[in-house]
Image (cartoon, rainbow, N blue to C red; front, side, top):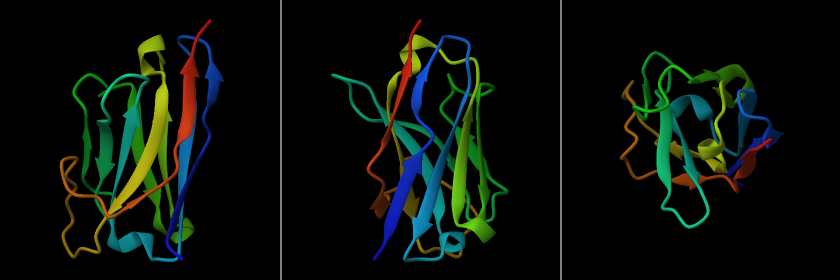
Amino acid sequence: QVRLVESGGGLVQPGGSLRLSCVASGFTLGYYAIGWFRQAPGKEREAVSCISRGGGITNYAGSLRGRFTISRDNAKNTVYLQMNSLKPEDTAVYYCAADGPTFKFICDMTAEYNYWGQGTQVTVSS
């Protein structure tokens, strides 16, 4: 059974940090580009970041570059999203998604992602 499971969300004060994890099972993560997305209440889902299957290519939403860092450990079938200097506007449900399988070493935040996790809540508030 193909699954993506996010974890690491929670309540954090403005300026704080969180590291989200996305663990894949039922397929080999190394053949997939992975994206992180988020959806705040009353807003449309937006792309946050993506990483190519080998980890060599990363992309970020412009406003998040410099605060968020995506990485992956294919041996652990896990992708991470390190979020620093968090702001109240970062509050959302964060989802990871897989795009593939692919032989390409690219990632595209606008691609049609095949598999999605159930999401993890991130709340930034004092």
